[in-house]
Amino acid sequence: MAVDVAALEGWARIAAALGVGALAPKAWDLIRKAITGRSTKERAEVDRLRVEVEEARVVRDREAARRRRWQEHASEVRRIALDAGVKSSEIPAAPNGEREPK
Image 1 (cartoon, rainbow, N blue to C red):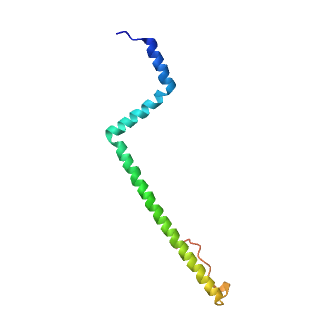
Image 2 (tube, rainbow, N blue to C red):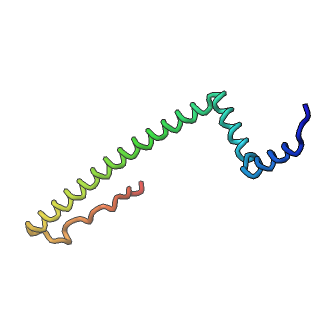
Image 3 (cartoon, rainbow, N blue to C red):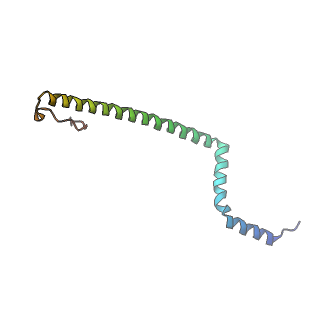
């Protein structure tokens, strides 16, 4: 069987034009991950991290809501004190939310 060199050169040009050289390593990497099970492990890790992020967001939102409720309460108590005749200078300043140095 004779090999048609011109046809092979034509196919090589088409492959180069389509960027097959750039796709081949990616395809090989996907095949290797599928064989070793690494792709499944990476997917599980991504899913685990996604759950962790969602849990952290829930905690953040809960703490922010709690902080807002305390701020509103402090504001209400300040207004009650002012309405009762307490001078503004006698009401302690609100904390800035930072911890005092030890």
